[in-house]
Length: 295
Ligand code: PMP
Image (tube, protein in one colour):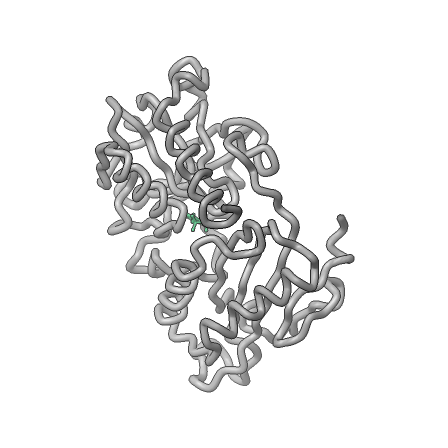
């Protein structure tokens, strides 16, 4: 299904995708001055909408962007876009930029934001992520470091994704980057959070560091806690990940994606049965999606 057949929501109107264009003077284009969320619709409703709306609000606060739209208005625009495209299972991106303003870098408080809802079909992936990824991921530790929180608030999901782009550009034959912070501790992937399992315990870098607090990450931690799996949010080195029994990545699109190789080293024997914790969490996640969206 080509994008040209789709309708996007731009500044309050549904418009055919090819006509959904933004000014070259838009601050989102000029400076990456905007906030966004990647969301997922399952069975016609957004997974963890309130959590995404909270994170968007925190991003806007972090960059001082007062867009003036209520949470309900944003939800209505997403719903209208899904309906107009006859989609119930979809990838959704909601972007808000500071729009066009006179002057240069310093923003003005009065904002006429550019608000975009982009959708594309994305069937529920199932336990093996069938519709989304092609088998377990390979990870590669990259040289570029995560932008520290003191330079750009790590909890903010802004239009500035060059850090992740640079990380992905370093990859040879790997699916995702293992990005470290300035101290050399594991932070996250270019667009995912990183987990590993050792002696049955679940480990993931703390969001007190330079890590985006992923919504999928938070749900996985809740499911793990409910299942009685010991959880350790801390500081880890790439060696810890390479030596782990199991490694997996989380994000809205991949959900729980197992990793079978880190820096060329194959974990376990690459066999599904050797990933009991990853498999359990993927199943619990899928059951939660089933219960909340198709039940
Ligand atoms: N870290 C980064 C840098 C990301 O871009 C994403 C994707 N939004 C994630 C982590 C995972 O977040 P979520 O589970 O909310 O998709």
